[in-house]
Amino acid sequence: MGDFYNIVSQFKIEGKIKDILPIGNGLINETLRVSTIAADTPDYILQRINNNVFPDVNLLQHNIEAVTRHIRNKLKELGEEDINRKCLHFIESVSGKTYYQDANGNYWRMSVFIPDSFTKEEVSPESVFCCGETFGNFEKILLDLDEPLGEVIPNFHNMEFRLHQLHDAVVADKMGRVASVRDILSEIERNADEMCLAEKLYRDKVLPKRICHCDTKVNNMLFDSDGKVLCVIDLDTVMPSFIFSDYGDFLRTGANYVAEDSDDYQAVGLKEDIFCAFTEGYLSTAGSFLTAIEISHLPYAVALFPFMQCVRFLTDYINGDVYFKTKYAEHNYVRSRNQLLLYRDVRRHDQMMNEFIKKILKL
Image 1 (cartoon, rainbow, N blue to C red):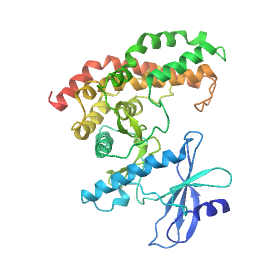
Image 2: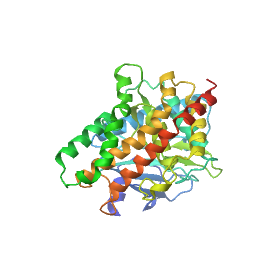
Image 3: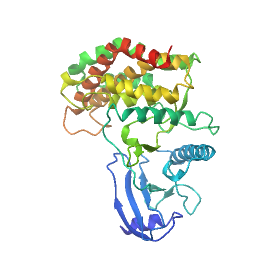
Image 4: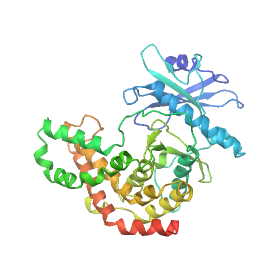
């Protein structure tokens, strides 16, 4: 624990430290709560940045600083109170940066802990409207951010790139697994061209890239005790992307009847009530700035992300499970089949989704 105290001493915090204890269950970064002794000094979050996932820590923190600074200024303009509860606040190190590299090469950052706040792991038709509303507003408030952001994970949601990775894995067939997944590969190949539509529209200059969160799960926002959203958190993946990233990826996880690694294949499918509630919330804020092309392709986005995740899980399975954490030998195979089944069911809902979106926007 002494090392943690030394690390904290590199940041310009208020008060004296009471204790430093682990918090949360994040899979990427190590996170600890730093408690202070006095009641009038804040507690803090100390986090080790996984620079294997985010090798350019300077770019990562630049993006986060630019986004949080812009959001805080917008909240001030709107006359919002208690801004520290509605936007993350990162602490400078003694060197003036919002991160510190220790003697072992590890990178650390600190932010102010937001008390009386909670995360959720599940969504309901009643709660998911505000999730859509919040992520739509997150994009909206960043529309006029004039500070350029970089891609902290290049090609993160690039379908063409993910298919190239799959192709390379199939050619190498390191584990001899390709023969057992020919049916999945055939279905992917049949739909690959259509699922690469976003990149084609972008090259044709009809689909814009915007500042997106790119990891829109319900547990990446904080709620107050009344169930109202305080702020969006986990900003590591904030970068330029298509709005399909925020809209489609939330529904991939939030609107499936089962978890993405469930082998209860009969139960896999799109929850219509979650789709409708999230979409209504999202369009209540994002509908004011989305282009006609973006709106008309929202159902495509709902299909794109289970398709993309199927490709990514299958690629990892063929390569020998080197990227995603697995609990058993066929884990990535089960994940890929689960996501392929979700993709199929989403496509069966094309007409319903289009009609609902038109109804909401009165098109």
